[in-house]
Amino acid sequence: MTSFRFLHAADIHLDSPLHGLSRYEGLPVDEIRSATRAAFDNLVQFAIDEAVDFVVIAGDLFDGDWRDMGTGLYFAKAMGRLDQAGIPAFLLAGNHDAASVVSRTVPWPPNVYLFGSRRPETHRLAHLSVAVHGQSFSTPAVTENLVLAYPPAEPHVFNIGMLHTALAGRQGHADYAPCSVEDLRSRGYNYWALGHVHEFEVVSDEPYVVFPGSVQGRTIRETGAKGAVLVDVADGEVALVERVELDVIRWARLDVNCAGAGMDDAEDVLRSALVGLHGTNASGRPLIVRVTLVGETAEAGAFRDRAATLRDDVRAIATSISPDLFVEKVRVDVTEPARTTVAVGDDLGAMIDGAATNPDLVAAIGRDLERFMLAASTSLGERNDGELRLGATRGDWAGVLAAASTALRSRLTREG
Image 1 (cartoon, rainbow, N blue to C red):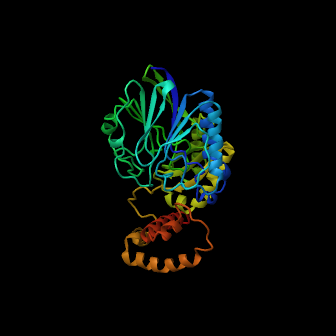
Image 2: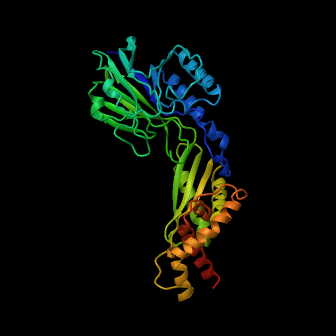
Image 3: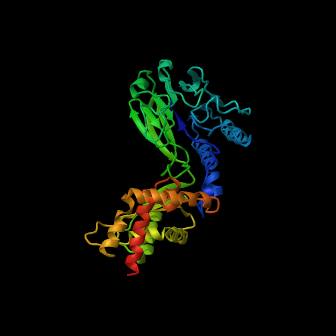
């Protein structure tokens, strides 16, 4: 057998619509919206620079039907670059770009091979002694085990199986095309190129079963490095599986420990945490971070009471540290330490502490505030996590009372 190398990618979600970003002041919205294309450009350029022999994309190249022809034209141009470099590309459709979802088409270059959705198909690269097997999704929700219909491995060639699946289940991902690793092994293939799960994972190395993860994180749910997998094959055996980072913007979560801190300490604590995060960003890519304030502090009520001010402070601190450090959201989840005495008077303290568990008070607050929230909803703008208004919108009146009680205790304590 000959030796060769190929690039395995999945879950590119070209031109994915990113809703709600405009309400987060200061985010580089234009860069985020174009990030999937920029990351895919990196993928194409990497394939050309490394002179890979072919590329496989295991589903969700697109993110649903195209809003306009620009998405298809962009992809055709990108594939044209691979074609000019003599690099074939094998694609299959996943749940987001199933045959029943993507209705528009454009002529693609002759180097692009799209697997059909009616049954498994095999494409061959005779000069490399490679057979690539796969089946596209016909609908967004494929719940049957597709693997069992895949053909057995062809003899004397390197067999690659492509499949969009969550295997036996992965947290946060729908259980499409369910199957087991044993089902995959039963086909006798040398490498399984999977898609659908947005985190990089080498599930098995006998044979190799790999999720490359998404090429570009799109929201705070997709943190950390993103990219594809470069596979080296020598004499018919996988010699190396190497993760390649291709993303252009990176998402991160930062928990800031405010244990024992007061409002006067908040700026120093926040700055120290953000400086530390920036220092660990060795990639140099722009970083979008969700900051969550945690820990026990006697001034928890003050922190919650000043959530909007803290949000603005965090964004200002991040900007002063680096023009490429952005804050997506600030959440205030600090808690009060257990109290052994009541600081604002026994009767008043007991009333404040019991407010959230008083069913009559909770019901009354709900009746009164629900009408107010409905009347005010058109003029208040977008709500943010951590605000009392978010709890009110969800009808969590006990939670609203609990947060308000904590803030009230803090104010009364500060004002003597």
